[in-house]
Length: 348
Image (cartoon, rainbow, N blue to C red; front, side, top):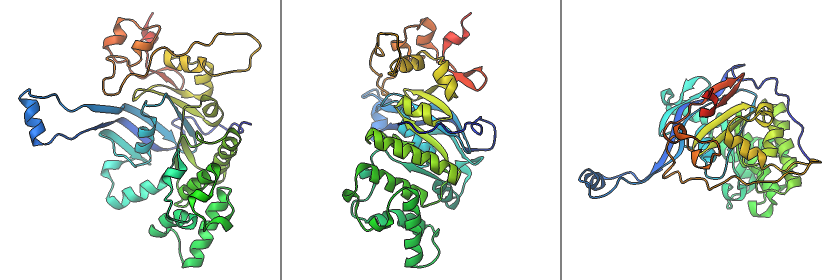
C-alpha cells in the first residue's frame, strides 16, 4: 500500500520563500588538538588527528510547502545534514539561513525560536523518547517550557490530547510509558512531540525504516495529511527510493558528504543523470514482464576519513576518466531545475 502522491505544484524552487537554505555548509568531526598535540604535529613527531568530513560543501534550498527527499547509502552524511537543517548541529563552515536570515546573525532568543520552528523525527523513537517520562510529559514538556501553553494543568492536558489525536493516538494512553507502546505507536509519539511546538518544518530521518511495511504506509499517509492540514515543509531522509518517489516533490542524491544530483522527483526517476543515481535506480526492484539481470553497485562506500580525490565516486564509476581522479565536478544546471555534478556533462 503506497501513500498518495502529493501535489507538486508548490514545489518549484524559487516559488515562495525558502524556509532553510544552506550555502557551502560542511561539518567535520575529529579530536580537537591541545597544545601538546599541536606542538608534536609542528615538530613532525606525529600526524594531525584524523578528521571526518561528514558533510562537504553542500548547497541546498528548501522552499516552504515542499517535500525534499534526501537519498544516499548509509554513512554518506544524510543524518548529519538533517541535524544541521534542524539546528541540532552547527556547521563547521558555511552558512545556514532560516527564513532568509543567517543563523550566525541571530540572537540567542531568536535561535531558540528558529530551532522550534524546525523539528526532527528520528529513526529510532524508542531511543529518542525518555523512558522515565509518561507520554503526557514527553509531548507536553517543550511547549510548556517555551510558553506555548496558556493556563494550568487542564490547559496542558487538553493541548497534549490535541497533539496525540493529530498523530493518530488515543489520548487516554497518555499516562503510559514508551515501552508500553508498539514501534508504530512510538513513532506517532515522536511525531506528536515534534508537532507540539508548532513547527513550520519537519526533518524526518529514516522515520519509517524500522517499521513494518503496513505501518510504514500509515505513517507516510499521516505525514501527508499533516502537510495539508498544518502547511508543513519536509526534509525526508531515506534510503528507500520507493518511499521517496511517492512522497517527495524534489530529490537530492548524496554521496560521501556531497550532493551530486538534485531535481524534481519525476526528473530524477525518469532521467537520472549522475552515474551514481543511475546505479541506485538500477537496484530498485520493479514488476516488469521482461527479464533483466541485477548487478549490484560495485565496491564499498569509501571511508570519510580518507575520501578519494577529485570526484568521490570515481573508484566505483564505470565511466570514470583521468579528470575525475583529480578534479571535483561542480554541481551545475543541466536542465530546467535539474543539477548534476559529473564531468561527463561537459564532454563533447
